[in-house]
Image (tube, rainbow, N blue to C red; front, side, top):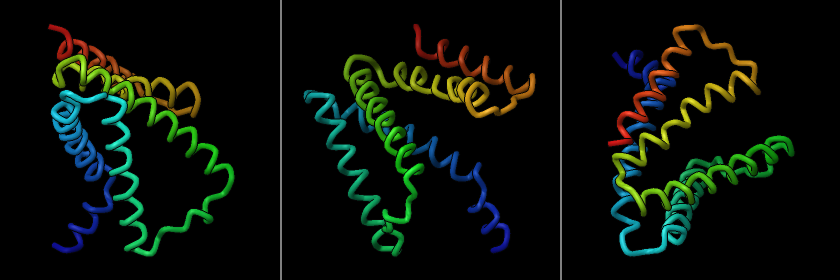
Amino acid sequence: MSGDKGLWLGSWIFWALFSAAFAALTAIFAKVGVEGVDSDLATLARTLVVAVALALLLAATGRLHLTALPPRTWTFLVLSGLATGASWLCYFRALKLGEASQVAPIDKLSVVLVALFGAAFLGERLSTVNWLGVALIATGALLVAFR
């Protein structure tokens, strides 16, 4: 049984499901958190919590070695960080203005965009069934978001 547990913990699907669960909690907690405050300030507070928590985790496990990252990695991580920051600013502003049950599905259109960008820029190949799934995700997000 412990072997199965190890395989499960090493599976991308396990971590992706937990990511989805935490993302859902993020939307709910953030919606409550932005009430009565500036959404950009709320984004900064959340970002600081994430940065400190990750630094502590890496330090506690002996993996805080930023100099081990090559320049190309730094370039793309900086770009990713800037995109993340922009995404979070927009997400928190949307949560401030709209309902979490509407904002989150539109935010998840990122799944559709990742499929499109992955195919266009990374040469990833999706099958016809995969593209049907992408279309259904887009349709579903729109159906959930708009009343």
